[in-house]
Image (cartoon, rainbow, N blue to C red; front, side, top):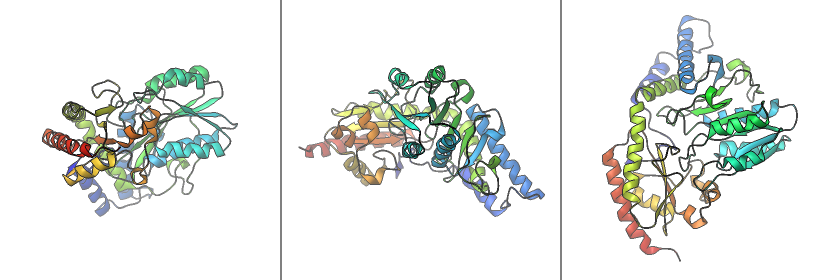
Length: 384
């Protein structure tokens, strides 16, 4: 199988598997215990915090809160902040957010806050002028993903943050960095980000672990109470094997940043082949554009449903998706693509190809060849 669904999840590095295995076999101690072997595990957890600080521009270890993944991190950021705000405020959220954010905002409305939707343009990028008109002195919280999980469009987080603070200096800026962490640069201090969510399994790490980086001074109401771990913000016994696995993934990704950028070359190689076909259209920024992430390519095949193309490719040993893995079984047209102005037919004819550090040029050439042949075949049965 050739795997091109790395935005859904990635194959763990061997170093991640080895580190987690050793942790479960020999380092199984509870990191909160007081004896030496447990303290050794605690040191490894601290090392992971330091690695996250180095990659996000955070300043202190206690700003890193470990969670069970991106969804929990987003929920903790949004609901924790909403509960801490003393009076009803305005929450702004982009129209292309992952369900971990979009669905959570519905709970925010039930808490008495007002939620306003920030539009995007035809390239899948936040429309800053339209967003500015939505902002006022009551804007308390803004949530915007770093990279679109469907099109790979990099969002103008720094500009959005500066614009919001011109309206209200105390506004909180939350970024879902699940698709951006370690593939697109992030510096929370320079970009004006208060809350940053990340996930391990998108960077060749384990599933079930992530982090929320919380700028010092930001107040969150805990959503999980118990033994007081993570400064009382997120209680629960540390998932030390997963945290150690996350650390290994961050270390290897950091050492292989040249390979991360090489993913863009793979993306361009595939696009240059497939874009020659009449009826194929890219969704989002042009793949070579500065605001296009290196690892996600969204393509619409005119006259062929994305689901049909995906299944045909699987029959050839090539795995892609039709969009977010969290909603792939619901078989409904992507709201994100529709908000970009795509027709229902165009959105329904879309597949997402996402690259990881284990893909290579030979796979790209094979995938391009299969797509060309399958599209030529399938479009003969164009829907009327």
